[in-house]
Length: 234
Image (cartoon, rainbow, N blue to C red):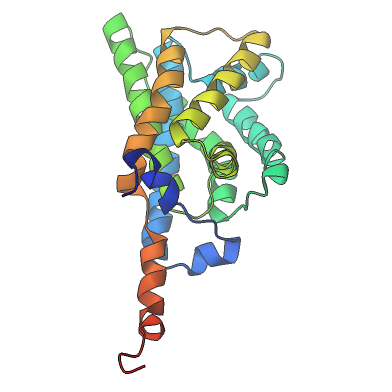
């Protein structure tokens, strides 16, 4: 029996861009992708507006934004392109979801920052932080589970999972801590929310992914079933 911690990893397929589009259930998967990106962008806005500590990646983005005259969403988009370069040694394959993440996540975050009111009490700020953590985990599981190619950051995560054999939880947490220290070096501040995010999103994503991933292996088995059935008289 497959261990629960590894179930999600084994459901994720390693498909090329064209195979991702031909794998079946495309409208559903595109919907999951866009919903996941919208939730992830909203989670960024919740974490930043909470003012009790942004996510590790956004500590990095905020640190960069301190030194350049562009919006946080634009910094996020430029950083996404940079992260894609790290895919090359991992032989990670991009897809439509990779492009969508690179182009849409930053604007979604900027829109969320424009629409969300700043909380005026500590209790509400903590609520914003917890909502950001939860929405990030759900959004990540949705768009990674759509199997249209992960975003740059989660492609780095899934690529390292495949190459190292480690769990999503362990790899995700390691990446989050690395970018956190980089953001601090650039002058961004951290808080309790940063720690909660860094230690919480990996395990939450690991729990949610088996329920939200689209099982393309099952689709392939259904398509191949007629010719794969052996002849009883042979």
